[in-house]
Amino acid sequence: MQTGELISVNFDSGVLNGAHVLESARTLRDLEGVFRDEAAYRAMDPSKVIYRTQFFLPVPEGLEGGLFWGTTFIEPGRVGDEYFMTKGHFHAKRDRSEYYVTAAGSGALILMAEDGATHAQFMTPGSVHYIPGHTAHRVANTGDTRLSFLACWPSDAGHDYQTIAEHGFSARLRCIDGKPELVAER
Ligand code: PAN
Ligand code: ZN
Image 1 (cartoon, rainbow, N blue to C red):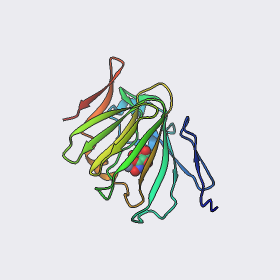
Image 2: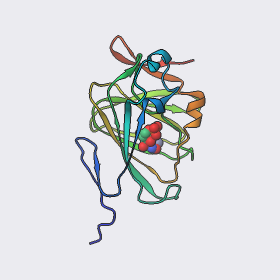
Image 3: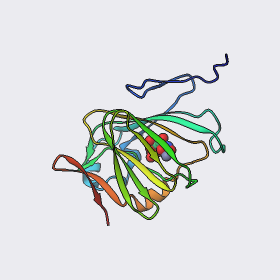
């Protein structure tokens, strides 16, 4: 039996194990301009890690027909009244879709169509989220513990961060009276 590039996933923590698993981290410094409360952002330690990713890329990036696999771990916390969250992106090839599956913690997947229509799906261990093409996606950790979710996406999807950097999401998930609420920006 051929094992290939075998990796494993711990379904309780979402942690990936295997020789070919890559890792990266995003600190507050990397999230400049993401949160609305600039003063709160400036008052925090820029080297604080907000989220980490592990990923498995069995084929070259950009190859049509392949699939990538990864886990994202978002720490609990807030900048002002906004929960720690991922930068968010459209796929560079707009029609490429993706699955997210929650392993641990609780949060919200914020989805924005190209016309700006935004909605959120609650994430809880075991929840499966289909992200259609042409839809920007970002995850916020609304709980008190680390949020981990698995992801599977096409190897030719690519990431368009620029559109979000320029225009943002049309709604933000804010903590209002202790509860997450999606608030329209404009
Ligand atoms: C995920 C994301 C991951 C980190 O693997 O890349 O959660 O979020 P950002 O890429 O927005 O920083 C995915 O959606 N891949 O396509
Ligand atoms: Zn994606």
